[in-house]
Image (cartoon, rainbow, N blue to C red; front, top):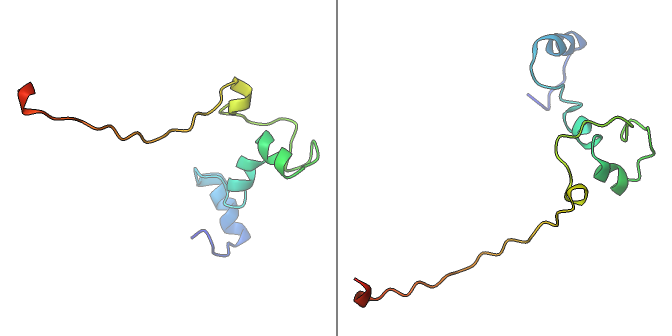
Length: 85
């Protein structure tokens, strides 16, 4: 249960045996490793929410010089004709 209260002993057991990150750092660990989060929320450099050493798995579009294209759903009209058979 993610919203329950955990005893310290249980937390220690999870740290040792559970393959998942502890619930209190799942989101914080992810967002604190993004430059975008630090920029948007004005986190000071080298603060807990903006560490100097970040784990970056994917590059942002700005770093790759790629501009995301909006995908438009195109409706194509198919003209079916009996003469094509």
